[in-house]
Image (tube, rainbow, N blue to C red):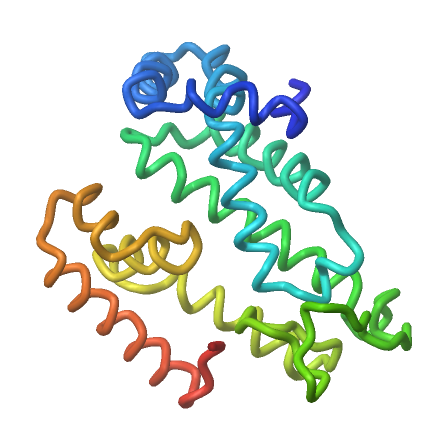
Amino acid sequence: MRGADPRRCSELAGMSDTTLLQSQLDRLRAGDLAARDELLTRACARLEQLTRKMLGHFARVRRWEETADVMQNAALRLYRTLAEVQPATPTDFFRLAALNIRRELLDLAKHYFGARGLGANYASAERRDDSTSQTGGPVGGAPDLTHEPSELAAWSEFHERAGQLPDEEREVFDLLWYQGLTQEEAAQLLAVSERTVKRRWQSARLQLFEALGGNLPE
């Protein structure tokens, strides 16, 4: 398995539609393991987009790793996972993809910023460019992963707790937080009202807030 080539994603963006993905998922569930390669190829553009968004929540890891490399390693994880787990729908497939990307990012964070990590003891000033404010702070609200072991542990716990949410809340949390969908898009995908999505989203955030003692990433 060579995985999805990020350089071809733009060429395949128009091919990653729900109907084609569902057809390949049906083949996979019927025992056709060859469908794994086709799945990753068809979903290439979406996987790249998902990886880029999730890498944005790991700003310090992003200083060391390119989106394409993270995506390639996460795709290999996903490929192996698909031999054991066969998602029933495209929504389930991308949820599984997000899980594997998350695991890859957490492993990279531990690799670079664990107690003996390369990045933990690497002192460098943040690059100053037009993306910084006049006060020196970054423009935008992407959460930053510090190299402090205690904060790394807290960030890891956040993702672990998110994966332990009840099914309905976890489903909405994955779509909004990790996959970047709007509440309206999530409602359409799940065939529920936007009000239901908002309620589940609020419930998910409240449960995480309580589980983490009030410390939620922005």
